Amino acid sequence: MAESKAMYLLETLKKTFETMTGAGRPSHTSLEANVAPRTPRTTMFRDDGVIPNNPELPFIHYLGAVALPERGDPAAVFEELFERNGWGNSWRNGIYDYVHYHSGTHEVLGIARGHARVRFGGNSGKVVDLREGDVVILPAGTGHQSLDASKDLLVIGAYPPNGKYDECRGSRQEHERALESIPKVHLPAKDPVYGADGPLMDAWNC
Image (cartoon, rainbow, N blue to C red; front, side):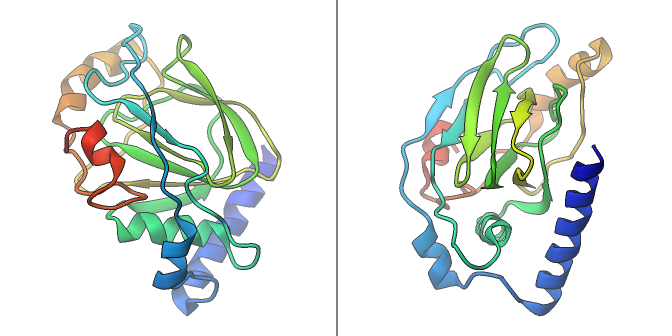
């Protein structure tokens, strides 16, 4: 836990410095070169009575969608890519080791460093091995929990505009509220990786 907090503080300071100075941030041209076309792996998760998941929108996994540079900051690549496509309020951290979900917003996660085994969809969901360059897109309501991770794991998360961040852990009251709020979450205007013409737009009927 102490190592996780130290990493979070270090990466937050690094991000602040880069934002202020521009150091380590990729150019538009290099950003384009880092993105590889990928067919999305989609999964629908059912409401298990505790974790609502999303009744209409599939979970999406882009395997190795982003080639990370040997030099520079890999976290900055994801941040710039997501921001360019309208997914902002980004953060740098790991993935919580308890199951949780967001009922008021969709979320994108990019693996900037390390690897992790993450279960999506709640206790009856699907375990996915994530590695550097992978991207997953979680529609509102999707449960997620890290089961195991490398010590150097670094994840970049971001959200589309107009969403409302919350953290639900599976109480009955949260579940009831989530069933009302999830269908009201706006669809994004762009795929966080591939933009206005990305596979997400077809998968989610945006």
